[in-house]
Figure 1 (spheres, rainbow, N blue to C red):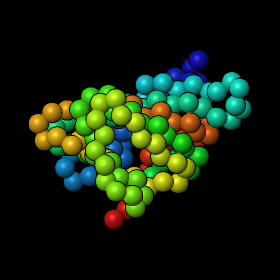
Figure 2 (cartoon, rainbow, N blue to C red):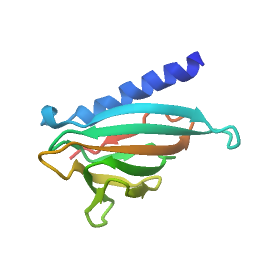
Figure 3 (cartoon, helix red, strand yellow):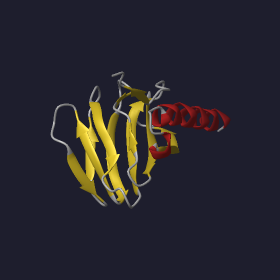
Figure 4 (cartoon, rainbow, N blue to C red):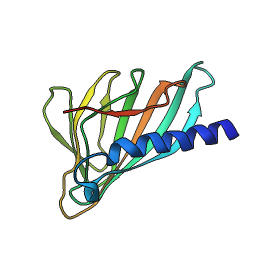
Length: 139
């Protein structure tokens, strides 16, 4: 229990750094780990939930995720602009889901609105040993 709590706190610190590391800090996404559970029937894998909240005009810098991460992201509120790898930029609205495969590059991750907030829940299936879930892409 204490180990899981420590891991969740560490992940929260690791996730919040990259999300805020760009040149418009007032528009940075807020990233919060909301759950972290080892999968008992899949040794070495965990399920981690990350809430990403964007204020009006908010965004996250281009990034990649842990090498083992498969991600399913569901928009809970508002609309999110997203581009994965060299695919087209798409806008996802509340209730819509997109996925990211291990090794994908998330070039655009932003609120589609300049006036309303947006939120998404990203659910990671990841190697339990992975501690850094998000790494900014250097320009």
